[in-house]
Image 1 (cartoon, rainbow, N blue to C red):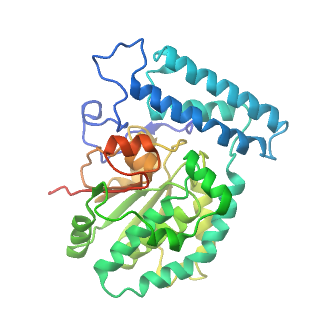
Image 2 (image 1 turned 90 degrees about the vertical axis):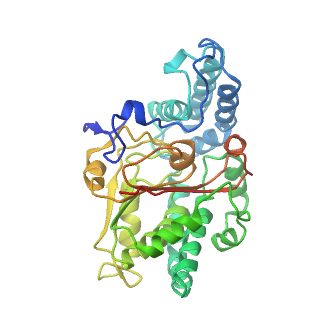
Length: 367
């Protein structure tokens, strides 16, 4: 389902990629495990995906763009559950052994084969509209913080608060459908520091010493995440003269923002002079990452994002899917930041942290 144009390896990964890069963070199995028997980790992750089927089925049923949506949604639920049960019985079936990339890919494939292109479209549009109306206030509050270090911390907290809007998490999807989420309250209510991985002080110190020249940010969800979390953070970088590339999915996957949606959002936020609340945005580029999943394997990205990233000196992977479940331990040829909120109990357990804990992992590469 990825784009027709040739996919390439992300140019800032150390080579040879085969021996230096593994996308999946959590080892579901080890070489000593019986290849025909699912491991306890595989089973707990398959169960996580099984438990998310009802919320995906509900979204699919109410997709008005698909004829006989309820019938097709039922087919999706049945087919996906069958495949997941098969993987429990024989982990080598369906292209296994399974990891979070394969489990996501199979789910997306079934939805698309049944004609569901974007089952979260309505909720994304609603959340984007809400977040766009809050953007000026969030930026004003940030700009009012005079101390630069404190402003950076506030912007990082904004990324965590925005990242809560994730409908791929069954618990959060439920909370969300009940009462929506207040961005400001979320900023105040983050779990206390130190977070489970907490390199904020190092990241802040490096930023204050000397900002980077060019950052590539692989972005995550629509709504508050991109608009109230990432964009104020990126705007601060632009204000300091940095170039920023925002890399977004090519195709829809859960409530992740796509490249075309991001272009629309920015056209609504910029004024007639192309400024984002008084900051020139000519150094802000958006790119199609070539990805179509809520996780990302950087050994396969679009030529476009590869070309735009060659001279970057900071890579940021934002969100649980791209920055924690995949790529948490990925090394790059330049500085990197993995930032996101832990929204699955299985991830919290693996990291030894709390549910809704925060991860900010900063790696500095000394040239």
